Length: 215
Image (cartoon, rainbow, N blue to C red; front, side):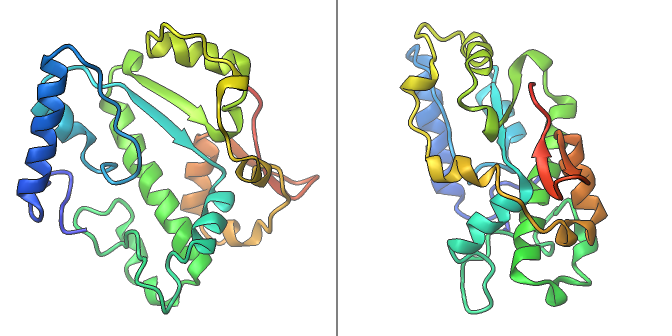
């Protein structure tokens, strides 16, 4: 958390710069590189500036409650756990208004905060990123043939992407469909607003967060 978008080398500078050198060497040899995971989510713009090349972003996002529940199952933000992924006291946090109430939040609310922090950073990136280099991908659409065709075009992929060729955790996919208690989200209008911007909405009829069909 010490590293920030404007000061990305506060800690582990040698390790980070070594990693970027490996990426640059790989690209200079004509290769393509894919970085996956959340470790670099606050440094994409800096990576792009350092590498001096086009960087395509696939923004894979999920229902915030499903994501929060999954992280909670893995022990994130539990009071006796050291697995604190991020908090509003981190340098250049996007949602600093959570500092004053952090100690009062439940573990599920802290996981929702983390989801929102990541989405707020992505929103900022997207505003300055070339449209042709940004692909919005809801998790619920991963097995959609039309979406995969768009993704293949975005990646200039020579291989036909088809749902049957993907390994997706069915249990995680099912989490996108289960009813949720929306009262937690309603207590955090800022997080709810971010969710709605990404296409999620609370259905008053079914009392669950749903994904609008299609992207």
